[in-house]
Image (cartoon, rainbow, N blue to C red; front, side, top):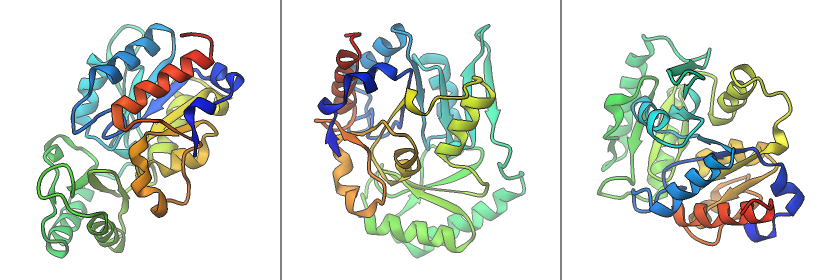
Length: 263
């Protein structure tokens, strides 16, 4: 990982899409700092398309698409995209492989197995507004469990046939052949009609569930708090911000705009 200050000017100038994880990437201590929100507004006003790509629930996505300076938001680790169309109406684009309603019984079984296998873990507080996945909280609320507990939860999920990803706060489990990357690319192609965008994207993330994005896109940036996860990841971002969370995101955006000649 190189410091984001080393991003070449030509590389920065090509960027049109700013994709970003949410928790601990644009937040600090669970809060969205003014610096990060202002950075998103700055990008939006300069014509960049800002797209949060998150494991958060459909309920969160509804609010974000309506109220943030976001062109769209990919939610539940790739199950859906919420966005406003040209007339300002909210639209929902669902991945074709999302599991049918009967899968909720399978997710319930996964839930019970995780709670039994890993003492102290619990269902995430936003589970009530999820449609397609299960979120097991290991670090958002107290007691904060170690990453080893998150790996145990992931292993339980996968042993029961579910896909599972570890974020900085949750382990998300689902049934369906999608992830953050596959849905992001599908949305860009099928809804936004983009065909050649690989080098026009920068992605910001902080944890192992961002690995598909780090592996695929040439221009990626981790905020500084990615470092504790580094030895657990096969694919790290190309660049790293100087600060953690939303403060790191804002600092990296300043560098991006300066290097692109748009500061």
